Length: 151
Image 1: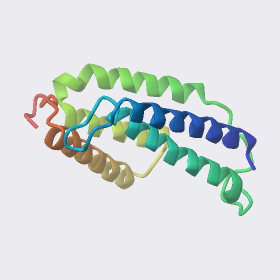
Image 2 (image 1 turned 90 degrees about the vertical axis):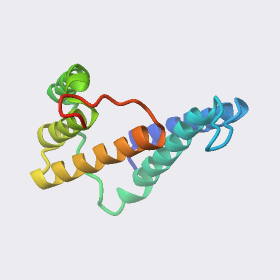
Image 3 (image 1 turned 45 degrees about the vertical axis):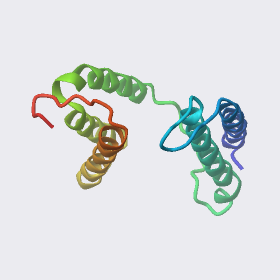
């Protein structure tokens, strides 16, 4: 069992549970008429889901040889590169628009940081940008910038 993953999973589990309870007390409302606690409740549920996954993997998957045995050191170069890419994303977001800037950002993260193949990076970027566009622009009616291409 990886003790760091297990402890981290427990911390996020408690935090997610507290967030769900407190946001429920704020009145989560309904899906079509959300209350002030709706978004924090969804975030709390997401934290609970990911903490369960982390706890499960720290307990069971290492025993079966699915996790790496060596601890990786923090790569400061990647952290600085991610911060730079986030700043660049924020700068070009209005000019290029939501879809184009999100596509480029996801492709850069997956190619430079994760070193994924082009097909994987482009496919995931298209899926992420399309899903985000449908969620925020079509379903939630958020005004996303169209950019120079008009999309």
